[in-house]
Amino acid sequence: MSSTEQTSPDQTSPAPVPTAPTGRKTVLLIGGVDAHLERYVALGVTTVLIQHPDKVTEYQTRAADVLLVVDYTDWDTVRPFAEAARAVYGVDAVVSLTEPGVNPAGRLGDLFGLTDGRRYEVSRRMRDKSLMRRHLAESGLPTPLAELVTGRESLDSFGERAGFPFILKPVSTTAGFGLLRAENPADLDRVWARIQEMDGGRTDRGSTMFTVDGFLMESYIDGPEFSVEALSFAGRHVVVAVTEKLTSERHFAELGHAVPARLDTTDHAALTGAVEDFLTAMGVTDGPSHTEIRLSSRGPLVIESHNRLGGDNIVELVEAAYGIDMIGYGAAWPLGLVEPLAASPEPKGAAVMRAVLREPGTVTAVAGVEAVRARPDVLAAQVNVAAGDTVRPLRDNWDRLGSVVVTATDTDSAVELCERLVREDIRIDVEPAAQAAQALAA
Image (cartoon, rainbow, N blue to C red; front, side):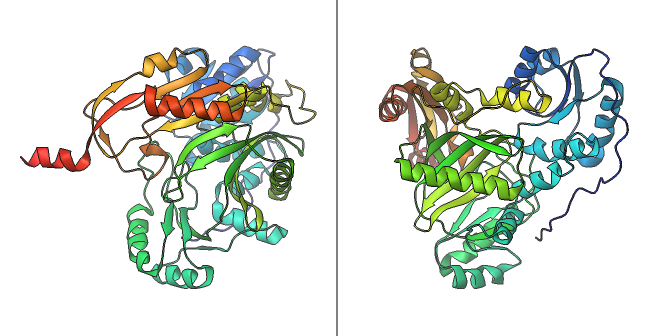
């Protein structure tokens, strides 16, 4: 359960860069979704896609110029394939816009001499929450008390120093997986049992591409939560949007997002300034970032950050509210195919996402989704349950039943509309868990 910071082990001189046979720019794209590949198709870029076997789509098999299907999270597997692709096709940039791909992309870019040689070091520091906390403390930036879990007794000693509640989280997973809240000393046996269940295994909800490789304890950060979506251009950070987040204090599942966040100018400046300082301290120089932060009683405190795009429809919210295609910038900038943003954009409207939630039980009927999706002010509406499915107690983002994304002229109107559609227009009938159990036993 330990973590140490080090630079990339691949400190060898890169071989001469082959020239792309087509004369076009060539990108080695590590992982991602269809929208990432679509941007390269639109740019006319030769795309060599290395995709995980679990994530290949029909579109990717058609649209990628070259498709290599391997587990790119395994360095010993992906390196020889990437080197062969570079030798044959030439590579102008190695890019990933998705969480499991940023480390291998940074490592390959360093190996091929396409970066400043520190991209993997920076990426690893962003993904490893323990390294992030230690680096921030060494840089003199504010950070909560944080320590790695080293055994059952470490929970007791940390609780004595940090107080209760305190937070425990896997060092390098995503989407709220495994996030725990220790309420009091009597709660630590439950917390320790859950840690033992998860530690050393693969994530089993939503994606199996992450390994639970230790837990970090952090003192609780109070205050409202936001995320800051930014683009960095050669060390200059441009905040594109501040996203207002709706989360549960009990389990921290994300229940919704709103753009632009409803903030006064002072708080907005405090949040954006803190994130710019954070990105600089962490060594982020180029590309998109998604930083989760709370406006605490101690001032702005970063919860965690990612050197990739925000998920959960955030890029769609940003584009609807600000007209900025963050996927497009993330794809084009490494190849020099887009001019940097000069300054933060002004909003032209608002956009909101709300999760679809219901009490635990068994789904008996679903209705209204198509009607909601057909509305002109709805960008997306989806439900991932059907009659007969089980609604689990809400523990993290994977337990949500779906989502609705809307646009409006201002954030208040968008929130009101979205919450009404989720609550009233989408119908999910659920037989409560206790009744379902009684019926099964009868």
